[in-house]
Length: 375
Image (tube, rainbow, N blue to C red; front, side, top):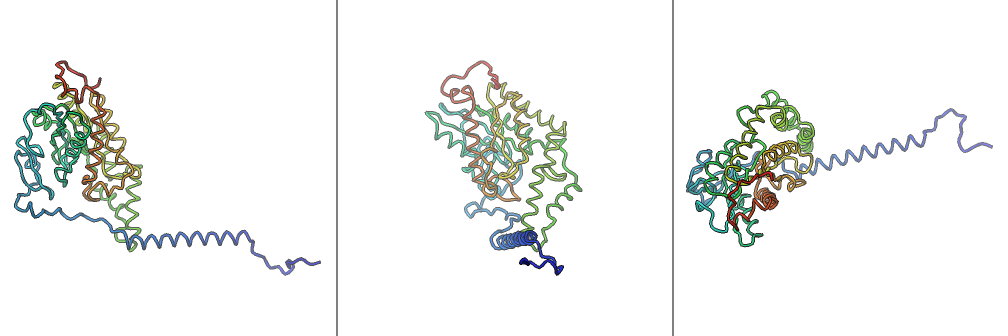
């Protein structure tokens, strides 16, 4: 009795498993191809690739005011001008904002806040800076106490200039608390090492390898993949590599930065004040790998070793869409929303300070004895 299959003619029958495997691979390949095609269409239709932002325009109501950019002009007293497209004014002490009394009024807890462009509020209206927002947040939760935050921030300042500005401008205003708004580039002193031009060019060539590709998807994804990889392992020529080199491999640059922390701690101790180091985050890779955490931790450890208090801002930014909190890929300063989050982080840091640093200094007589900020 013959079977249903003729095995005597020598013809090979395709194996069913191999056929199904080939079909499955074809479906997978087709699915991947379709996904890539749809992604390409989506990027071309929906995504607008970010380029250099347009220079901030001057509102019509400010057109008659002078435009200032230099550090010296930003620090002058009684300025009323335009800086980065917004009204910029200083009081008679050279601080951004309105006039304040030489001494805080009774029942007022005064905070002197110094830093760089993050603190000053580059491109941000005065009322939207995190200094102004934090003052309002603190007042909302206050009971019989008025808070006052003096904004001493100046664009481009590093730690030595920030500390001197606190000493020369902030401390004469008799604050109850001093705050240093630290930014990652504050280590750029005389011994700071920048990556070489050739290394930088090689890295940028890698980032921009497909900038002329006909594929919008490739133009969009490739540079982000390179930057993401550098977040895990800083690539030579990248800014992440440069910063890690100076914070961890450049003893001279680190000693110069430590001098600034030493001086800040000395100023606080000499005047029986608490000092808070407020760590600004780098507006970079907030949702995925953030490469600057080890730097934040090293600065925090060094500050605490000197009896300074520390507040991190990055945890409140973690997971955020980076486009929501900074101006652009070219101008990475925090925008209005970024300053709102910074204000929340600063207020949390101030409220976490021990009682001896807080409003008890306003409600009752100041202690005449020296306090250690590390107690």
